[in-house]
Image 1 (cartoon, rainbow, N blue to C red):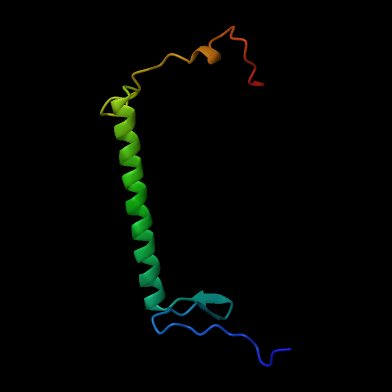
Image 2 (spheres, rainbow, N blue to C red):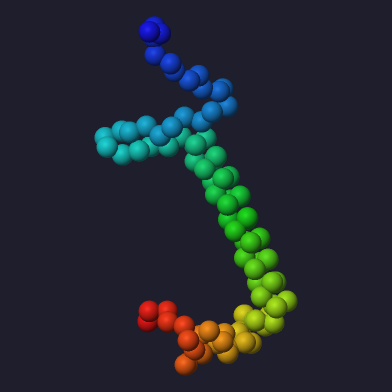
Length: 88
């Protein structure tokens, strides 16, 4: 059996985890700054994906540049009397 517990060493650049004081978590300014940087990247990437989706819908002629739907007809399998049952 190995002696001692295996403990991962923290990198010098690692940010400390939140501490609990009187039942409330407190965060270091470094932790909050790192969290905000990650969230900014997430929001930026989300905005890029939304823009690409909108451009695709415009290119397909489904919506106009203002976001109004151009195609309002239902696909053949969703028309009344179609031989499909969606359980509704």
